[in-house]
Length: 639
Ligand SMILES: [Zn+2]
Figure 1 (cartoon, rainbow, N blue to C red):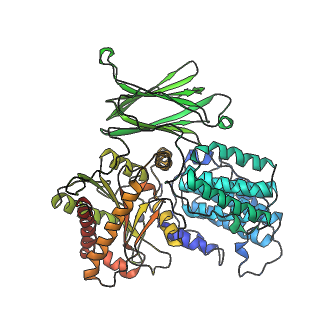
Figure 2: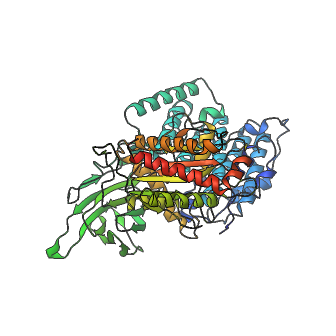
Figure 3: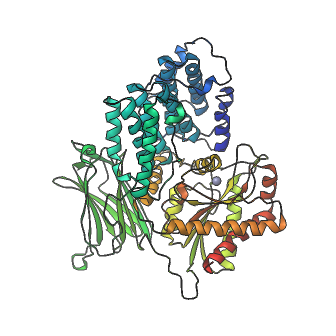
């Protein structure tokens, strides 16, 4: 494991300029971490015949230059059994192939090279988790889809792009959306191809994430436009680019299960049936069972080799028989050879047990009490998620008679930590150190002055996976969740505080996209552990999109407003030049799955020299901490 994670911004800034300048600067300064076997196994690559348009900008097109050695090396590295060299080396090779593609011109050769570069970047992303690689792969795929439009090969590039777009944000509703648009385009461009059939099949697999109501109507309209563009032969890469930011939530998806939260004691049984065409015909294997539990909640993820139907049931405790309350999932046609049959978990989940049945495998959670539960499946790779809690996941706000809101517990989340430094300022100030210090200051005020119980998601310079931060907030039964960060912009000129709440973004600006990319970039990095948390990470988006989150998003937006206003009031007195960046919405992993109003506070731009110098002072940090505490107070007072 490489402990020195440079900030993600560096690699992206460098790589986005690559197309105009040179690829050489792209290497040697980007983050990398340990490979995840599962991600590698999931890699599917296609060599499309397409063209990379972007690299021609400002460069006289030379005669086609064959670079068989780069090609051969790149192709060899797509073999999942071949170890990937350090990321800078992979990026340099992918860049060389991309540039060769651009030189080869608008023809099949150039297209094949673009797709090869995309495939290599995709593998690099899955191994090293640098989002810059996925972003680059998306662009390369779009270029390939454009240049090879009308062929199976161009269609494949479009399909790969759609799948990667969803993978990048770990949100199946984004996968659905992108596959849907690709399907509409390819129905015109490459109908009756095996690729178009594959898109339809993939779309069916994520059918549970189809938006409902107005959101689907809007998507259909977008599909009409996309198809119309394809009819007219519009094959600019932008026609294949994702039309919105990937993000979790809101209108996404009716749940595959009926009401996902059940009152304790409910013994209803639910049959969950993914679409027929997606269900594996043969047996599927349980690959692993990942349990997590504490005294207020728990989560168990069951990973399988293929899609299958399953049934969910609950059983009340039976004291006379000495049996705990149980949640069980009967997984049809599943075998569990090689997987531990009994696991002690802890907290409300006493243990997880697996047992063979006539038709498959039953997974049982022995619970310390009757709990609220929600069960979902996540496609590709298929997995079943069982979430249990001592409180219902959706609670309506109930202001008391004097207009006050009940705020008994608050979770303060200092962004980043450990090997994930977050953004780094011009003089080397790290986001992780600033956020931890501010969080400590917030906790002190909130607990001492407001008398509110406060939990920090991390108390020192350690790495905490994003999913675990929210899970801790849920298990703490927090009434508010405030994640503290420092902002960064590529130019370094942007300044001032900005506050986010979680939402699907309709028309995100570039800055918002960059911030979301950056804050979502933190990835588990413990050797051998990363894929576990990755699975839970991805599942977070699913939980929220599958749940009726009620007015939680609205309440989060309100809290974001309070934090932002408090920050401007608190900083403005002392630093009148403080720029108010306002509140925005975006899809942040760390906010997904929170059972309470949750916001992400970008205190200031650490990438700006003046903001950085202020962030380095105790004075400025204290004022920022005051802002958060003031916002919490205002929220409690019913403001
Ligand atoms: Zn951050």
